Length: 126
Image (cartoon, rainbow, N blue to C red; front, top):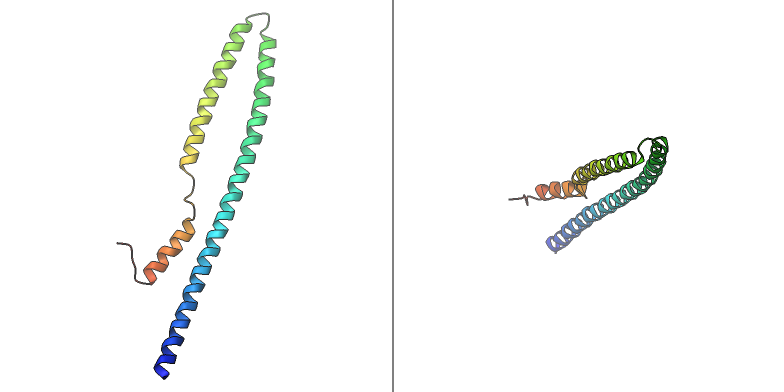
């Protein structure tokens, strides 16, 4: 009978430990999800503000340049501005593409902890 009580007690402790590990990992996943969501929201708001102010500045600069060259050659001023805006937009698109490729791996800390758990339990990746 003492062996059965010991076995059940041992299983109960092991189950408690496993539930604790799972609970910790789920909390870590939730924290990482929240951090990533906040980071994306900040990036989105900053991107919108950046686009708005860049557009306002570009429009005002374009109007200024066209007014300055109105008597000399307005078509040249307008075409030069259009080409400049196009070149800047291509540069921005390429920079954004590079930035999107460099994003951090989602749940990287959780994945690292789960990998450590698997190694500790002797279930290594083959």
